Length: 280
Image (cartoon, rainbow, N blue to C red; front, side, top):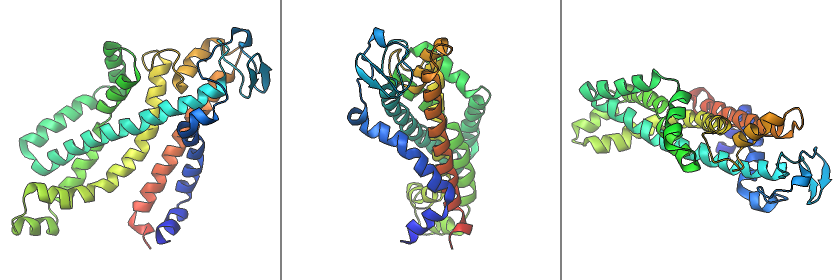
């Protein structure tokens, strides 16, 4: 009950969770709630407006340039966005946190080398690196996840290193060294638990960044393969026909905005919960 009461005290977290219900429901139950197959084409139903009927039945959000049901594509697009957001955060979080802990705890030449690698990544725009790698590897969902995961570890590394530098000189760590505890035990028992709160906050924000990055890559044509129901792909496919049919760009854009906003609000709420001033 205490945990639930603390969660409810954070209005940002509550609002973020409520906003995330719709995209999460789409991602989890897409095959059950989608009214039509997402890639089924009916050219006679091209550019149907919202709340209209066609040869294949009712289309709540209308259809796109190939007569595909837009609501079904939006629903299935949530699966890709959520999959990308979660897996990219896991890959980037594990890699970056590991690098930060190693750099901060060992220090010296190892710290200098790893931080210079971080500086190299920071010298180039994140999206530019992702675009170059995707252009080299080609489109594909697995490639998008790998590229975004391997290029999103820098914030975790910097924050984890800063936390480790402060924690490793604390009295309880010195006491563990005094009784003969090894580096692995100290890192597992003392360093990692004290770093995780900051990493969790970063991860909650980076989910939104990963979703937006996937949408951007798909919009630019180097993300998931054409025809795959992703929100960025729907935006890209609907852009040439905005004056004819505004539905694809508007509805896909609203879902991207809603999901990114919910992730950011959840991140703000988690940050507030981990603030000692809230622990009363």
